[in-house]
Image (cartoon, rainbow, N blue to C red; front, side, top):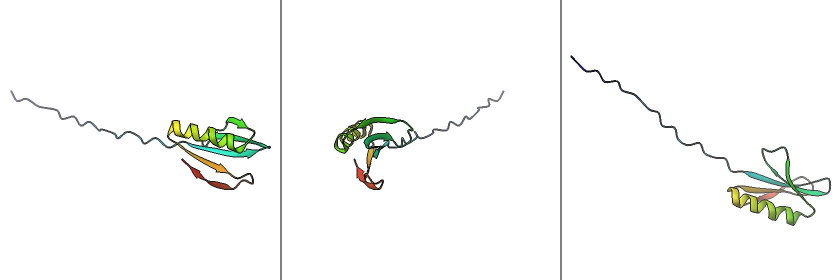
Length: 81
């Protein structure tokens, strides 16, 4: 009696790369807001740009993300890490 062996192939998938979170700091209706790039809701409102940027920097540091600050006229000021 001959033995037959079945070969099974197991595909090993590589773990998906997590996208870096991008936080936007922008001015709307006289107040500065921090929002997530993919998010529709504002995370938090601030009266000053400095407060909003500091908060977004803290979020980005904790979540391994980046911050993009918009100038008050709507143009991108630059990226921070």
